[in-house]
Amino acid sequence: TTQVKTLFRETDKYIDKVVHMSGWVRKIRDQKNFGFIELNDGTFFKGVQVVFDTNLSNFEDVAKLTIASSIIVTGKVVKSQGGGQSFEVLASEVKVVQKADAAYPLQNKRHSYEFLREIAHLRSRTNTFSAVFRVRSVLSYAIHKFFQDQGFVYVHTPIITGSDAEGAGEMFRVTTLKLDKPPRKEDGTIDASQDFFGKETNLTVSGQLNGETFCAAFRNIYTFGPTFRAENSNTSRHAAEFWMIEPEIAFADLSADMELGEAMIKYIIRYVMEQCPEEMEFFSQFVEKGLFDKLNNVLNSEFGRVTYTEAVDILQKCGKKFEYPVQWGIDLQSEHERYLAEEHFKKPVFVTDYPKDIKAFYMKLNEDGKTVRAMDLLAPGIGEIIGGSQREDNLELLEKRMKEVGLHPEEYSFYLDLRRYGSFPHAGFGLGFERMLMYVTGMTNIRDVIPFPRTPKNALF
Ligand code: 4AD
Ligand code: MG
Image (cartoon, rainbow, N blue to C red; front, side, top):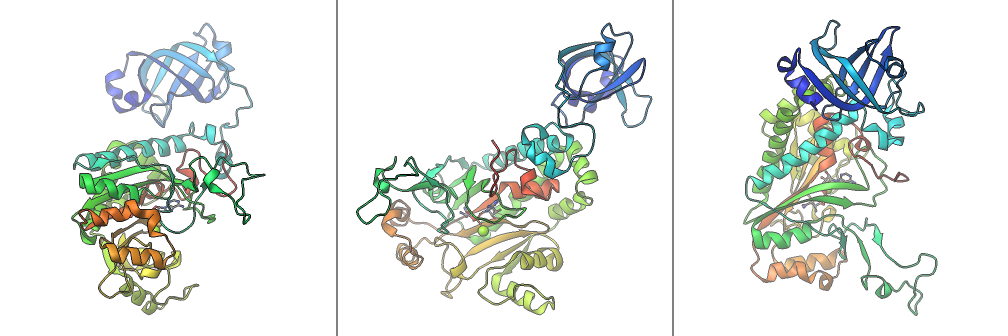
């Protein structure tokens, strides 16, 4: 069989040749004595135009085919007469594998993204979602390639954990206890010691803490896996289950961390533009006008760098009325992040050295005693895409900080051991994979870049 992708990419080689193809009917239209089928074979987001006529022994059956039917086609590739396509296939044989039920929901018209989300099991057959999910696949490969080419070790961190890596308490519990009558201690509280693991466990919010242990062994490592957050934020940029890439680098500080993040983002954008030219062209025409200008600007500019304190100053002096007033110490809201990335810097910008009280316990304290060596990368149109930091490598300071935020150091002894046995300066970050994919494709809702999204009140199969 010949792949549709190959036909599109190397059309000249196939003109006047006979090809065999198999796939599904994406569109069909028939006149009295002939008709057209758009055949999707899964190798390309566009389908190929198949022309059939009464020379087919089963012409009547083919003319009555429904959308989604599976077929096997033999035919000759010819230059196309009509516009739209440069070539088409004149069928000499069309075998019907299965005629699809006529109730197939994806009939020939524009469907809203909202409607398509309800049929997540079928939407990947449309050209838009076919393009999104192929780019998702290529983007994940690009990430592995970027790190592997530099000798980073890929570590699989656990999905079920006993610790809260971010200390934010936004975890999904994992339990085998019966919800209706869980075992209770004398004081009436649930007795987690009788649970499967003998203690409370949850789905991981980040692989970082485990990743750091591998950093102390392999120097440069990365994770790439699913993470789970029970934040009840029903926004277009939050999912309860999302994938994160978390590199961790040894004998490195915050500026090395930012350099790594910037190099990675540029590499993976370039990789996708090279490997998926047709999909990217499609996005730039139908999803985000100006997509190429945006991405080329990212590739050709040096990302901005500004401290939190300077950013607060910029926001206070810019003369813009924000809904949420700007004051040193606040967590930057998305309106502030948007202003910085979209209006002030007009390119991705790293904001560094945040107040310690709004950041996680593991970040290294600065000499001023009130800020930490944190960095967030803000991207125009998306907001925070990366969050990272240099880690606290001093045992006493880390223990003190954990107690301040209400964590029990004895539960994190594995983590503290890294500061006992050969402590070293190290840094890392987390890239939200879906946010990166939104940035590259121009898709504006995280639900439309995840095959089967999980968001509040929504976990379809
Ligand atoms: O800033 P976050 O919380 O950082 C961490 O988890 C650190 N442990 C990373 C590290 O230093 N190793 O999350 C990192 C990124 C965010 O910048 C964002 O892109 C993404 O993960 N993210 C989400 N993406 C989708 N849905 C959510 N609910 C997300 N929460 C965070
Ligand atoms: Mg963050």
